[in-house]
Length: 498
Image (cartoon, rainbow, N blue to C red; front, side, top):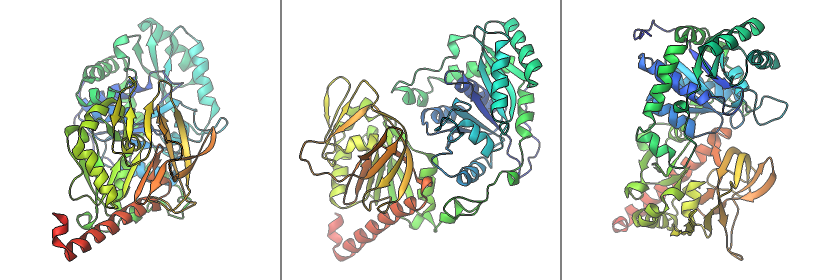
């Protein structure tokens, strides 16, 4: 297909966009999403990726394909108004925004409602939907599936269909005719059955492979095949026909913030004068919501990134530390060998520096980490517990956490929303003193979770700071207070920093 490098000027209120949804997990929406992103990026378009829900892996794919950081859109963890404003802000410079769905189009947190589903995000962002249907071993029955998806929720606009895993071009033409006759929805393209298009299983070495470019041939293959079998010009037209910005915004959020001021109201001044938060970021620690980091920066923090896997320790200018989740168990030996990092954590904790860790970071703060082979690796020893990896998943799902005590992020009784996904368990010795951080509520009920002690806070939940905006301000304020105390001590005793 001919490349279209020169795009006509776009109206400021326009946001060309598409939601890529599937009929269920495994339908091929990730392959289609990545192939389309790569195909459009190769045409010279600035493509902004988004992922519905709390997932971290797919956004890493998006970023590798587009060259732009991908963003999460989660309609349960954040308010509708925040989600809309964040989408508009993050898509402002893009020629095209591609929003990848989660599970099936209507699958979410509730059995009989749209909460947390791809459909809800399609409605909130007023986005046309490209429905990906796996048509293996079916003919006209594919029309019944599309018809049901179209009729279940009238607010969702299924603008086009792409059929996946066709046995041949003749099979494609058969299901295309059936769907268009029964549903009145255009079938604009297809992909054949091709094992070369399969996305690798989400093994723990996947993100390093993405970073090394090992999956680039797969992304290019998907783009090539979509170029051949899909009407990309028609898809761009559907994206460009999405409603203008002014038609999207809700009235505001549940914290009294009016639309258009939810994110920006937290800006407090030049970042250069703010406290420094050291953020661990590499193949072992890479699970961060982009807007969590942005909200901290808007509160005045200066974020400095460092890599424990490259032998780096805590940056000397740090006034606080944030260690997110990831795969520390895959790199446990390397982390254990980096005493510069582990001793720096211990020194920071002893000095009262704010230290916030979640999931993988929580594991590293423990006394030890036992990997899947049974090898025990010494960790920081700040949290009086031992992390043990299991073969079976220990937790998965959304969490609403309520602070049991005042802590780095919350006042007692305040709440945040987040997500858990881990195979490890945290084992505290009998009789060991422990103060829980949260009461954590999920589908399975409620239980106390995490650990706090002084300026230390750690837990398994990956929280979203936008679920309670004052939390970001509270963490930055704690880091600022630590910096002020540190500077006061240094002024009184200049030799104390040597």
